[in-house]
Length: 232
Picture (cartoon, rainbow, N blue to C red):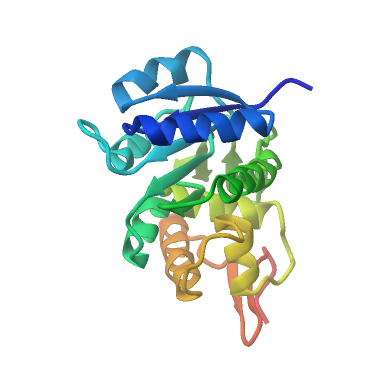
């Protein structure tokens, strides 16, 4: 099996060296960049399996660079873990809403980081869908990263896209908020369960534009399910 590649983007040489040593010892192929300008050609030429991205960097910040990657079709599905000293929940939500797959606060241990990298790779490997999913008039195309209803394009944020992908691949089953947090955000991301409700509302609002706001159903006392059947 080919080595999985990790791109480390951090302006601190000591952090890059520490991550290089830890990830190499864990069997990963490691590439290093000190800023977004240096990292971008690497991503284009040899897309990594995962990116470790520092939030605070000179020039283009990590969060700005992440948003740029998520706007580009070729890079949109590369898993990204944010590295940051910001520990406030609002900062975590900002990073995750911009398309990050996980969030690690500094300082962290090399063992924890390697464990989180492996967890994200396991979680995202099953999301590399290639087949178009159709439900009634809704079309979900994972290759072009487009969602449409009756051929009307539906703009979704990164988190709403992940939510919809989760629901489409787990139809007709009820999931608690905790389960949805685990599947969509990962077990190591500690967020309030209300975060799920916020993004469910955003997803419903986005697809209601085309008159299809009844797919994501609330099951009282249990959680949510995706169904084309009438909610009872």
